[in-house]
Image: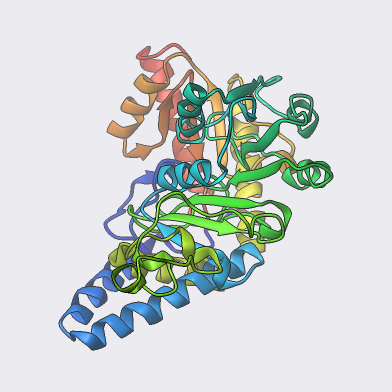
Length: 379
């Protein structure tokens, strides 16, 4: 398979094989130009601020299109951990309430809830079955005191993809909310903001942006009454009211979760990268990623590797994870060969994006074979 997005569009990628996208993607040349554009706009004074606002609006519009929502449903914070902590604070959880998470979650999806145990909030863990968690597994832990279910769309650990729409259909019959972490899926597969209550995502992975933004998408159908416990001038309707009469009113949409300016260099870069992804076409990207992933899975299985990630395309996205207690050593040796992937947590992970191709897959398989032949790792 040929790539959908040319490697020539990336800064200094050379002949390296980049399967590191679940950790971070390579920088786009257009993103470098976008950051320079931001720096140029800084010299325009008030005009620069107007340009910033226009680019921010464009970026939010791009994200909303990806999510099937509206720009006023999108807030930009500093990172996904801040976003999840903001949501945790907004819920006003009390002693006796519980939160349901699963054991395939990244720490940022768990830590903000563990803090609440000091206030008597129970955190319920759902275990995986063969590296997968089903809607039924999650629902079995939900009861009348469950305030929110927290789950990734695609697991960072195993690459397994959750049918969150089925889960949400059941949760909508209750008072339990759903927070979907789309950090490992948004940009390469469809995500629908209307089939969850909150969407969280980072800027620097599959969206091909850079570090510095946490994306919050809000479905107002069941969340319009939830207000943040942190407040800043961007989140209120009149920033000067606190000085004049000591009062404030939150913005009526997702902006109420924004405390101050976002990182505008990151906004400029993300505006460029999300437009590139939309112009390429998310359905085409998904087909490419799944097809190339199938190719990689077949070759890994033929070489005798044990996969965490399901073979069925409907249950995965870009992350292909292989069981290994020497993942760190394998990734370090592959890095010396110019092949980037992530190793650790009892596995190594190759993350397939639109710019990857069959030649990358062949280099990875050859690189693993070379490690095995030299006896530098037990595979």
